[in-house]
Amino acid sequence: MPPNTGIYFVGMLFLMFNMAMNITNSLSVLVPLMLAGSVGIIFLSAFAIPRIVKNVDWSLCLKKGSGPFHAEMLLREKFGGSLPVQVLVEGDLKDPAVLSMMRTIERRLETIPRVSKSLSMAGIIF
Image 1 (spheres, helix red, strand yellow):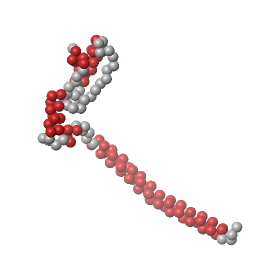
Image 2: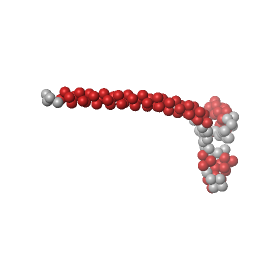
Image 3: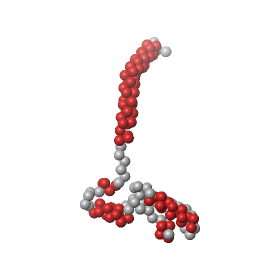
Image 4: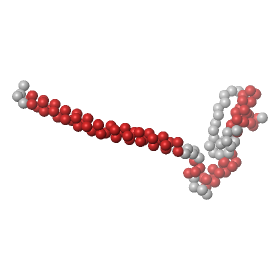
């Protein structure tokens, strides 16, 4: 073993200890800042999230007076809009019980305020 190895090892231990102390000192400053920042983000989110307005009316993206805008307004006026919602009913379409259930679903959908029109085979047959 060379004579300077022990000094080199002690020097490395000293450097590692200094690095550990610097990290510890940095953490003692960073941890409270990180906690304060996290608490601030949580409070900001708790205040801001309920204020988000959800609007899925894509026609707001259309320029008023443009061709697509007029087409959308025509579809809303004549057909109740252009965003269909489909409900799958499985069963024999010749069975009166299935048709009756479809008609019941159709009537219940019409009671929803934002649903302007509902159509089904049962509504056509009856």
